[in-house]
Image (tube, rainbow, N blue to C red; front, side, top):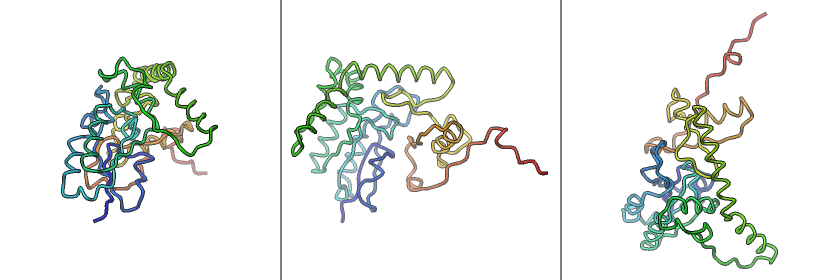
Length: 257
């Protein structure tokens, strides 16, 4: 039996959408708290450790090629992963000899949110919560660029400014009556398309419909994510996005004459 299953807490993202080969299946294991789009649980990007352990011990365990965790979890509204959850997931993977891969493109944002919300790391700098392996085979210029980038992106002043900007934008968005996924992350706000477009059923992809209409109305480029876990029969369902009703001046029939 081939090893072609990939457990991940991320519903859909640029990395988990391309797990490496056509026959591969993703096992979606988000933390239960991720289903509550209004809750203020700070670590909704966590993987469901109970479901991960069930998968690693289950009858299909031999099919699991690796586990992917995304920091921050872009497919779950940019929510962070706690260090405790990450350590426990790594321990389970080591116990069952399954590789654990980290998509750490936003490691600095994740580290900052860890220092703000995880008690064991509250007095630490973001630079102390993440470690980096040695880089080999690169030119000195490239190593210096990497070192400079890592230094700048983990600057607490830089991360604090980004957090303040996101918090300010979230406040303005709420005051305008626009529903967002709570709590706001650090690199972006995620609109709650299901609440903004209640006439569109979840399986008709309201997030994609909203993204299309934003582009048509204002040239705003965005993307729709499905954050609530899909029932098994809908996981591979594909459908065109439901159109958002046009404004009256755009929706009227052309005059004959």
